[in-house]
Image (cartoon, rainbow, N blue to C red; front, side):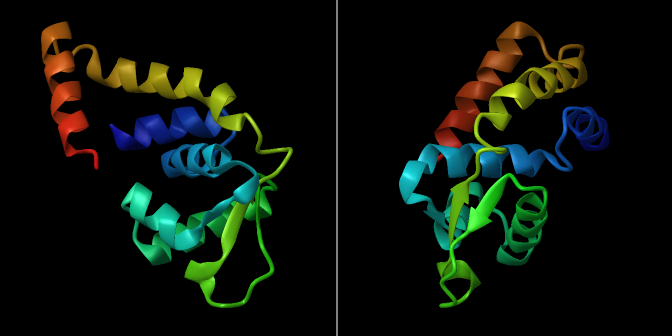
Length: 123
């Protein structure tokens, strides 16, 4: 399932589904940006993997990191003009890919039950 969703998102302009989550959190942070350590905590992504993804997203021009050199986890991310609203344009492809993978596996009631369970797990 994950490889097919990833392929759909590549067609929408991002390399990995976690890019969507990163872009969303960075944009939600607004003008103050978000520190790498906070992003790591919110997304439950290991530091090494998050750093790798952020470097690629930055190379694509969607985010920028501040110039502080107090360590990678202390650096702050900001959305760029190119990245602003990108998650909105990606969402239709993302939701379609998810639905096409799950609609034949879960009934509507099961999907709602799964959502309720996942919401309970979210901090």
